Image (cartoon, rainbow, N blue to C red; front, side, top):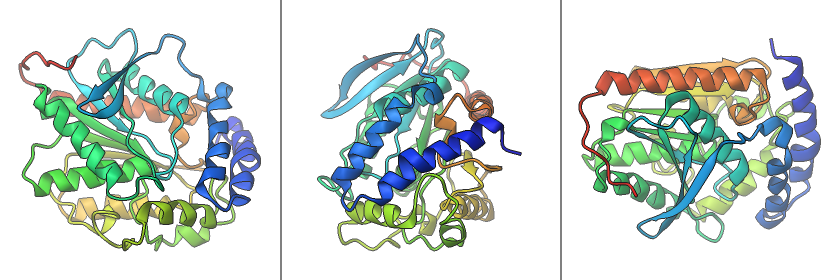
Length: 313
């Protein structure tokens, strides 16, 4: 059963996010609403000892995100959510910092180009470039974990499929929060949950989706990785809320990965909203992040061997 904190937070989300986003008819007005997420400080619980260092991975803007205990070799490569159109630096840096705190790994936040100014495939190409940059700078794939929320989960999974197709070495694991993996929105939850999702209404999702697609088919496997061949991917952990319109994206993803011989740990949280692990004040978010930390360390240990020193600046 959902905690009283999450029930109260869902009511807040309806007022400050869903209702306001529904009144927007373009991405630029939506960005003003999304900026408000960074002001939900009491729910984000931004770590006071987080520090970040902006840098360029080639020409791509990124940030190192770390906590004081980041002393292990390895990198959590994070692709933020925001419907391919937005970013919320305080929110996403905070959740990445929590993952680094749990694991001791260094965090790398990728500032990929946003739609509609930069539609598909710009974001995917940037995410692939960030992973290849790590490899080129001496970080072994077995000490890299990909992670992403919502649209960032889409980009993480799409990147893995592309890397596998190109015979590139894959990371140790992937962690996904409410991944958006079916841009055609064919899951039953897209309709069954459309009136109870506290974060998004369907028109909001469609507006963001269309800004990213720029005329491409939503069923293209490079855009909707649910339609791709998902064999041979690293172990994944997925967290999703039961009240999301995107719930079935996670369920069908986990089922397909298992059917094709892979490992997918699916966690459905009763009464929780979209990408709830980013709101660390919620007890359920803290539990989810703790589970992710244990999963990451387990997968790193599974592949661990003496590693060369990484030259990552």
